[in-house]
Amino acid sequence: MAATQSNYGTGRRKRAIARVWLVPGEGNITINGRKFEQYLGRPVLEILVKSPLVHLGMEGRWDVKAMTKGGGITGQAGAIKLGISRALVEYDETLRKELRAGGYMTRDSRIKESKKYGRKKARRGFQFVKR
Image 1 (cartoon, rainbow, N blue to C red):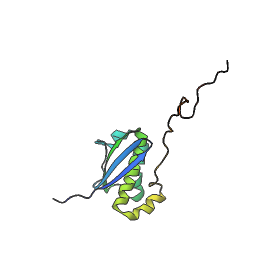
Image 2: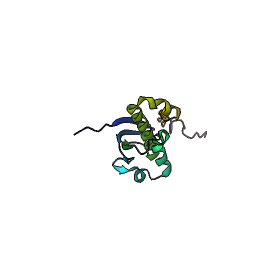
Image 3: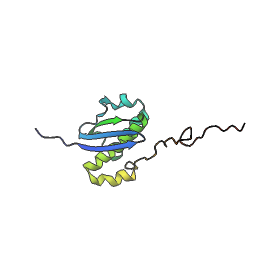
Image 4: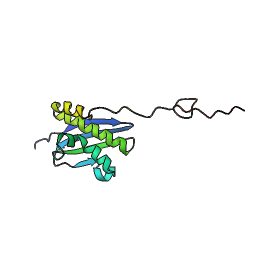
């Protein structure tokens, strides 16, 4: 039995982490064992997840299996997008330049700032009353 080639990529966005495997196939995308249309629920996020494959013209050539945890659905979709891009670069290093130019290889580092002691939130202080 011949082993099928699979490529792996990890993506992160906000608090979400996605582990993504690409296997040659007919374009099926599953996230946490469910079809991605059912899991994401919003067409904008579906477009976001497929965007690296569409950019390269490979949308029907790969099956994508993603396992995500943490964050919300939007953060998970962004993490899957980065994971797909990294897996494609693992498959073929020459794709890196085109994905980099399209902005798909950049990790979005914006995360929530942590709360500080002596404050109500990260920066907001308690209300001041003179009395």
